[in-house]
Structures are given as structure tokens and as C-alpha cells.
Image 1 (cartoon, rainbow, N blue to C red):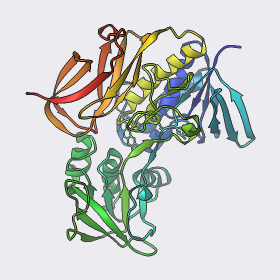
Image 2 (image 1 turned 30 degrees about the vertical axis):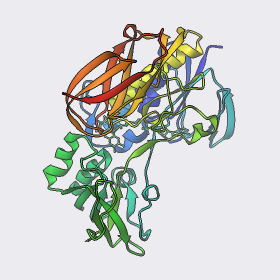
Image 3 (image 1 turned 90 degrees about the vertical axis):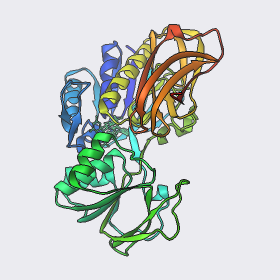
Image 4 (image 1 turned 45 degrees about the horizontal axis):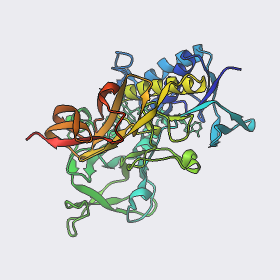
Length: 415
Ligand SMILES: Cc1cc2nc3c(=O)[nH]c(=O)nc-3n(C[C@H](O)[C@H](O)[C@H](O)COP(=O)(O)OP(=O)(O)OC[C@H]3O[C@@H](n4cnc5c(N)ncnc54)[C@H](O)[C@@H]3O)c2cc1C
């Protein structure tokens, strides 16, 4: 029997990973708990997807369908309505579907389960819990999938891309969006979304503000909006009451890792699962990609990353992984929020594509990669912002595998 790879999650990452598993010559089983492939893309009916991957501007469902049709035409074993409920250290996958539950052992696993939205509980929002408080993804699902307008007078907390896109969408569907509040002194979404979703519609953005109270018994009646100080805590006495019937929370996504918790995998300091430059975690044979590894802004990058992870998982399963014994650690230094990968092995691909985000916005700066006191690469950047992922490719021949020093990336001022 040929080598078998399980891919857990049938969003963009899972489909791209499964396609490259079979291209590499292994068998792929794609588990998706929903009734269709596509994941979050199916509810993102705006355009802005696919410019790099398909060289065309597509809506979310169109992007999903392009990949799904390739999957349907392939020999990938797609299991819809099948939720994986556990993964063991021996790479045994246990799943449930309408017929019951079962377990199967695989030669490798690619974990592409996507991400979770932070909810009101995550920020301990004070006040009542009436209806009308929902996450941006829930609002998007009601509106785009079921055709329900979740409210008429809406306030949005958080300037992440989903919140910005929902501000425009709700406005176009007839709701009044009263404003967007952002805790940070800078917006957290892509610049194009600030312009196209807020400024074009005259929706105010309140930077360094947060919602400090929700009022209402059955249905939300108002919120209290307060200024925050440099420590990001509300400044007493600045609260203003704003009447609204809906509060949409767009306060961030986090990788959905509940299934992997019992495995005790190594994590980086941002809480992401640490992977090497082949996307393999500290459990040999378990690979991660897409929003389950780190939250992406663009699906094109998700698909490209997942293709690489699928290819590497297939090579591992087929016993074709050619790696040396030596490795180097890599970490995020001054001014960098996180860095992927956290480990670089000798051998394999000739170069490493580092993915990272700055910890805060910066202008006129350098991104510098160094090992010990040697600079490996220095790139001048006019601006960096946390909402836009950075990519830097470094040939492995520039890294010194004889030294046990860590590769570090940091942001430094121009002078
Ligand atoms: C509102 C919004 C707007 C966006 N706008 C843009 C844009 O304009 N342009 C752009 O390029 N990108 C955009 N993105 C980003 C992009 O859509 C996502 O980064 C990408 O689609 C994530 O893909 P994924 O496969 O990692 O995760 P998901 O799409 O979340 O897929 C994960 C899949 O795993 C399944 N799953 C989870 N757990 C299990 C389990 N235990 N067993 C079986 N299946 C499981 C889920 O059901 C889901 O189908 C947007 C995202 C959002 C949310």
C-alpha cells in the first residue's frame, strides 16, 4: 500500500495541501467537518482573492471553487461531514461522521483546521449579555449565507480586516454603521480596507478607544465607548454612551489548536505551534499550514504555504525526506511579533522563506537577519505594519550550520 497522508480541514489550506500530496505521489485523505469544501472562503463574497495564486481577482467562493474542482477531479479521498476528534502521537486520526466513528493510522498528517474568532468572553466585556453582540464572522455568516441583517444600528469593535469588510457590507445592506473602535493607536487592518470600507463610506474610526460596557436586557440598547491611555487601559471619565442595537466584535483570530493540545507540541513565544522549514512540528510526521499555523491576511499566501507543507508531508510519508543532522534555531527579535519557521534544518530546499509580522508600525527602518554577530540580510523598508505579513527568502548557503547560534530577525531604525 502506498504512503497515506491525512489532511485535517478542507479550507483553502487543506485543499492546496491535499493536491500537492498526490502530486508528490502519496495518497491523500481530506477530512472536512462541514458539508462542503472551502472553509471560511464560502462566506467571503467580496472580491480581493486570488491575485497572486490565480492571477485574477476572484470572490472567496470563486477561489474556493477553483481549488475544489481540482480536488474533485483528482484521486483525493474527500470525506465531508467528517469531524476529526483526536490525533495521537502515533499519527492515528479518530473521526466522526453520520455513520459513526472510526480511527485510521497515517504516515503523515497536515493539520489545516483554520482559526477561531475571539469573542466577548476573551476580552471580558463588562455589562449585560443581551442578543445583538456577535463576532464579525458570525455577522458575515448571517448576512452572506442566510440572508439576515443582524442589526440596524451597528457599532464595530476592532479594526481587523473582517470588521472593516463587515462595516462596508452592513452599510451596503442598509444598516447604519456608527463607528469602528480600535484599542491600538493605529488601525489593525490592511490599508486598502481602511480606505475602501471606512473612508469611502464616511464611517468614523476611533483609534485608542474601546467599548467599556454593553447596556440592554433582551437586546443590546447601547454601548459605552472610552478612550484608552498608552497602557491600553480605559481612561476613567472619558466614557460616552452610544445607542445601538448591535455590537460586532472583530478583535482577532487565533489558530484553532484544541485537537493538538494533548500532544504537547513545542510552541513559539506567540503561542503558535513551532515548525521547521518544512512546516513539520516537534512531532515527526505532523505538519501545519494556513490559519491553523498563523493567521493570514491573504488566501493566496495560505494556498502557497499549504502546497509546500503538503509536498513535505508526502515526502516524509514516502521516506523521501532528505535532511542533514544539523539544524539552527530561528527567533523573533526586537520589534518583531513572530517568526516562522522556528527551526531550519540542513538539506531539503535550498532556501528558507521566512514569514513574520512587525510588533508595531514603523517607518524608515531596516529588517535585519543575523546569526551571532554576522548580518545575513538587511532590507530597507519605508513602512512596516503588523497587519501586513512580511516575507524574506534566505538561501541556506548563507547560514552557518557549524555554529550553534540562533538566527534572529529584528527591526532597526535607519540611523
Ligand atoms: C472575513 C474575511 C475576509 C477575508 N478577506 C480576504 C481577502 O479579501 N483576500 C484574501 O486573499 N484573503 C482574505 N481572507 C483570508 C483568507 O480567506 C483566509 O486566510 C483563508 O481562507 C484561510 O484558509 P484555511 O484553510 O487556513 O482556514 P479555513 O478557511 O478556516 O478552513 C479550515 C477548515 O477546516 C475545517 N475543520 C476545522 N476543524 C476540523 C476538524 N476537527 N475536522 C474536520 N474539519 C475541520 C473547517 O470546517 C474549515 O472548513 C479573509 C478572511 C476572512 C475571515
